[in-house]
Image 1 (cartoon, helix red, strand yellow):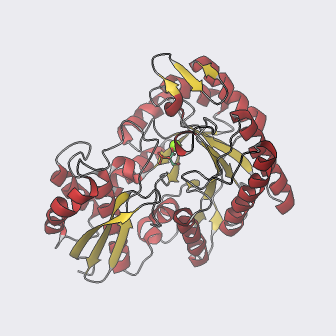
Image 2: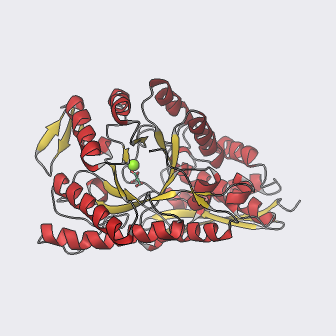
Image 3: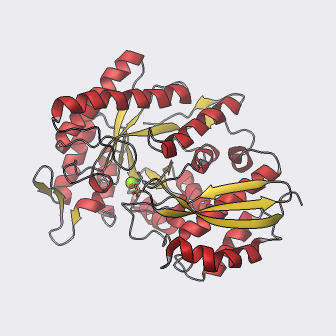
Length: 416
Ligand SMILES: O=C(O)[C@@H](CO)OP(=O)(O)O
Ligand SMILES: [Mg+2]
């Protein structure tokens, strides 16, 4: 009774890139939940459709009433049924008619309303009372590729993990210190640097991929020494973005080099070993399961080899990856798959097979903090949500609040 849905509101709001997205309010008899959908720039081709033609305006004018007339009277606790109803309203297998961004925002808002109806925070409502592990934040330090301008490195994200941090506050401040240090280091290598930042708040240096890797490692070491904890470098290469299917090569335009899959395996392995990378995401094109498999067999014991565009939070595609042993980690982005229950099914399959779920933001974000709760509820070892910028710190600061609320919080144990 407490969680019966009484009202559904959908509105058009801004995201961090200045594009339109949806925000959904769900009112129950005794609670309220609000969630907004993010959006990607380097999207996997098998992600569900974000919005149909007509965009958010079509959702407001044509879809809001359809959704609210179905959902009002349903119990927000019945998230699996609600997600099915949304799928039925949509009627396609990839949310092409009402948009996965619409359905994911409804799905998350419904769960938040259900939690609020019983006066529980979302992480506790979903994860249970015994949940006490905090994920390490993968902080975004420098941006290239589709998240930056023309003269930036081809590698999309130079990330770090403060693996020695004892709590989330120490972790997020370690990340912001490395971000500050990198500003100084970039200035020594790039005389034209104006302090420009990419979509996720990382700096955009006008340097080669190699120089970026070097200063990334230097910043980790110097700040790590200053504050007395280990900080490890990590990458999201987003390699689908610079894979040329005709030439069958990875094109590094900033360095004037192209690499076939064999060269790419060697190149990435070498980077991982030289810099002790703890995590590398999308080192190959989304269709290159064999490249993933080979790299995972070479370095999977010491590095998270993580699939984003290759798996798109899709349980069936992950099953193929598990069968091939293509990766030991998977990016979890609820809007790639369109609902909370489908997201959970993928997380469950990953965990059952020792594939680490890494809950992630998108490059276009809002101040919605839901993924902080999902990461804790799912027991994710890592959360990827930037380091700075209002829409990024919304999640990081929420993790600080969650940690404060827990009676016996611990940082999750990383097995790399
Ligand atoms: O590639 C990624 O992992 C994400 C987030 O960092 O970018 P986008 O949202 O553009 O897909
Ligand atoms: Mg990625």
